[in-house]
Image (cartoon, rainbow, N blue to C red; front, side, top):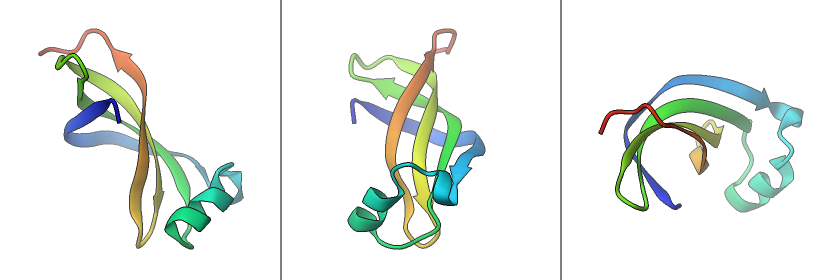
Length: 81
């Protein structure tokens, strides 16, 4: 990852679940069987240049396996340092 999640992920919502997850076959091969969901939330992140930003985070998650493969989708520019 080219960022570090600092603190807690809030405002979590499910984008897709079950057969709607395009990467489902790869996720099952790599991490195991589970009910895979793609989720998004907001978190404070530390970027490579060590600035702190509030950003939208996307991840895959399955019960018993946990959250995997975090992606930084949208850094909000108005975040306080």
